[in-house]
Length: 592
Image 1 (cartoon, rainbow, N blue to C red):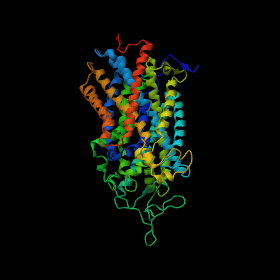
Image 2: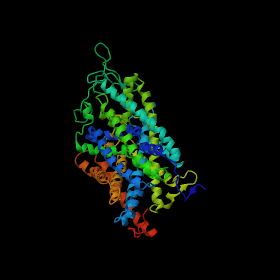
Image 3: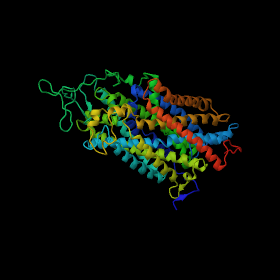
Image 4: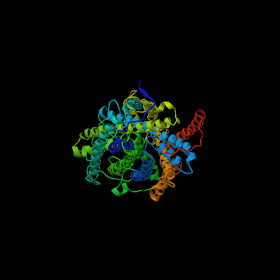
């Protein structure tokens, strides 16, 4: 017998375990590498990448305070879903709305928790494609990996992580502790190297430039033919330009703001990196950046497995966000943006599957010598892969436990509330989530280089031919006319995040309204700011495209996905209410 329909999860997690599980989901090692591409392709808004993270961080900090405060009153399994139920039930006037409020919060959280793992497995496919293309360029392009290959990786990765989650949270925590230490150390090393590269290569000095075809960096000017195309040997290695004396012409770096077409290239100084530049750009970048910061709330879903949930969960929520978001990300994103130059610009980043990997090769060559940058990148890539395991694992654990909590209340099918007899994990929910993640992840990889990331016809023609390496690529014009499917599922997940976080801030206001522990700043000012910030970000899904900020197709498709999920939720709620005999409004008050 492998199922247990009764019983409770075992309390095994202390403060360290809770914090590490939340930190694994925020995962700066994974997201600096993977989300930089998505942010680079957001049209003219990329100069405001760093400040967009600041706004997203403030939004998340406001929401984190709300989660931490509610966790002090209502520790348990279910996170925001459980908080909504208890906050309304224990309110003197709003208790009748307990059922409908918790269902809305729980259903909205699934738009986030059930798509987010799919975003992660899709990005893992892109990541592995880049690494394989770097190692075997005759089989796979590093800049533009094959969709079929990336899908195969995504499927295998999904079920591998689901197996770890199925084994139970204790084993998952041990994995996450190791991953956090390794990834943070590795990415801080890269940050120091990137800043060092910029400061040691002022404008006009001899430096390195990137060649996407050979996926390598060179410290010379490239030789070109009569049509301006780079001259290459049989192995597609660019040939260095020679002067009249036959000597190699070195490459001299510059830091221009834009090219002749007005496309952003690089920041002229450090002040520019942290500048706002344009409020609209900042909000668009925040809509992508929220992906890198979410996860701090995941630990509140593990209250049933915490040894001292009332004390440790609130600390873990805030600590994980401050360490990963306020320190790691701000340092790493500053370093990556500061390192951009004429040799590797934002336009180079928007055309690559892994801009951070490219920068690692380039700064590695500069520090360790020609040819050694690739080895440095591969070492860093290993730590990123570990981070991907950690963040996908943590999100699957959280999503499955929210579904588990709703199932215990008969708000979703009851089989999701079954625990594994040995591991005491909600294995039915975990494996269902794995299937959903694999399917949506593959959808996200169908046109991962669509819209603004569409490769040129010359780049498509140069791809290694084969089912795994080039099947699925169209012409540049056709790909540019199609939405970027990775960005679409990312924005859909992010919309669910904004919706959940906004509702959680509202829940916090209700929770402490009239409560003896009410604090004006923590329980009103901060939650109200959180509500407003989340509403602003959601509004930019509609406003941004009209104002010419970012891309158009992906936000509208994401809104369509959210609308379909909301309509389905309303239908399901009505049908389930009739089936179970429950009323929409609570008729008998029961407090805990």
